[in-house]
Amino acid sequence: MSIVTPEATAAANQIVRVLVVDDSAYVRKMVTQILSRSPFVEVVATARDGREALELANELAPDVITCDLNMPEMGGVQFVQEQMTRRAIPIVIMSIANRSGEDVLAALDAGAIDFVQKPTALASERLLDVADELLEKVKAAARASVRRPRPAPAAEPLVVGRRSAVAAEVIVIGISTGGPQGLKIVIPRLPADLPVPVAIVLHMPIGYTEMYARKLNESCALTVKEAQEGDEVAAGTVLLAPAGRHLKFRRSGERVTAHLDLRPLDTLHRPSVDVLFQSAAEVYGARTLGVVMTGMGSDGREGAAWIKARGGRILTEAEASCVVYGMPRSIVEAGLSDSSVAIEDMAAAILERL
Image: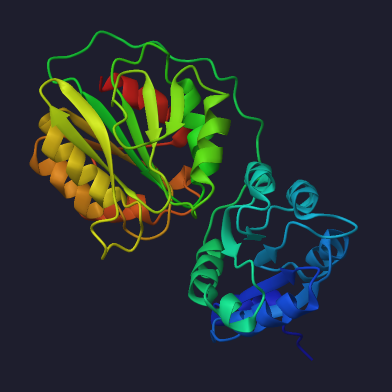
């Protein structure tokens, strides 16, 4: 008699097998119901804390784990750290808005690939508000390339070479899933005397971008900050678009400043990589260098077309180093990428084009 293993079943039917971890029985039930809406997702078990989750993950080998942060016995950050040393599994954090911001960033540093902002009110209709987002991120996590976190390389900034006649005047970066870890590899490698400004769109829920910018600034020779209305877009400065608002540029003579805007309202993401890239193309023209890194979806493809139409250049992260090869793939398949570069080499590739 043949035995069909869970792994074989998942492979045959492309079922995403999920372990749900939360100390609230109500949340475990609701998350299970939300995920079970999809015929391609199966919740194979639930756990009340990190310690129980470690045992179940070892026994069941799920494809994805959703995990709360604040739990007894073993919290979410410790669980992610321990699980990633045992076996790298895509982990999606579910956190109450703003209350556990530091822990969210710590969990991402430890190897979690994404997070969903859990509503503060636990009425069923509020949890259902994030149902589509949770399903989308769990499915994306199942396709993600997850590795055990490596110690960040010594952030020894590279040296800027002699500038060419077509040197870029601005670097604009779009990044999503896997972005918090990815930026910590690239940005610290850029030197303090970087002759151009950097602007970044990182898809994050409201309440986290300012905190993340502060953390990134601690490891950089450049000045990293969450963009504010009217900030000067100057060499040596990295502006991170605030969650909930688009980042654009405004030029007045030789001076360029940041402009934050709710419009356009019809973008899938706010801030949008497309909006940032289009604005850069309009203000800087051929002297724009766009960089599209790990993330799901295609945000940045239309913006990259704007940059290329104005004579600018586009770098994409190579598939081998992406957590999710969605955004870069959309650029490559549209014929808009000038070069695909592994994340470890991205800072050097950027500097070569200055």
